[in-house]
Length: 408
Image (cartoon, rainbow, N blue to C red; front, side, top):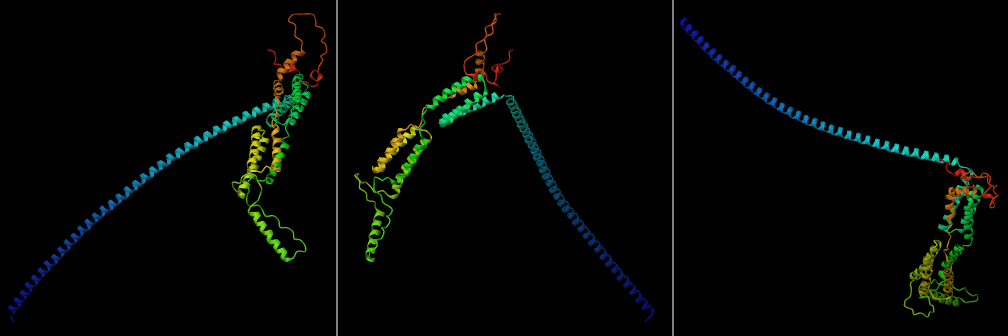
């Protein structure tokens, strides 16, 4: 080849290379721009996603913050309610404590007052003389005598109490007690004439009549009589005779256990059962028990009506044999007795003793001569008094003038 051809081929190669490099550069630039666009697009997507993510986080945080705020508000309201409750309880406890303190103070004041009254009473009791103590003892005995007589009707104990009260008044040596002792003597004389019924004996009689109820025969026949005891065997009997007797005894026992045969002049309307027969007897016992209760309570109306009721029950349901006649006779004797006596009134001596100050004034006036209103000659010597020495001269006696109020 020639040089010119080689040059031309070289130029061609250069032109081809320059064209290839251009396109290669274009391709490279295109790739670069494509990558830049893709990167920018990815950057925009990432930025948008980051923005969206930030908004979601912000919304979530806002929700959580609002929830926390609502919870905090609820806690604050609960704390306020708790504080108000505590304040109310504190007020209640304070009021209760104040009420308890006031009640305690009132009780303490009442206790102090009672203690003060008791101390004053003890001081008054310690200031009394032996005569005052004897008068107080006599007053107590007279009150006991009145209670025993009018509440229980115990005449013997009443007489003993009156005698003891008279002894205390005699030992007191008080001249004003003479009238009280006179009244006590009158009361004792009246009480000794009172006749009291024998309640214990009448009660014992009623108890005996109750025990005899089972022996009374009913008017109507009844079944269920307990079988009689078998007859004793006689010596010398054969076995065949013994068997025959045993059979006969057992048959009679069975018949007696079923029906009780009794002669009566009254028309038979029915046959009583064992329960009815026992009920009739038990009713009679109850009626007698009611009479005993009326006797102990000294209720004469109930006592008389109870005896009449028992008589009527006997006539309706029991045969009029010897046992029933004896029971009716005892009831008539009990009905003739008076269970309540007319008791006298012995309260006048107690009233006089409780008003001993007035008696002392009257006694002092009767023993002390009247003072003259104008100057007069000296009076004649007083004659010695005649009467009960104990009412005039008694050692350690309480002078009537000491009981008078001081002159103003």
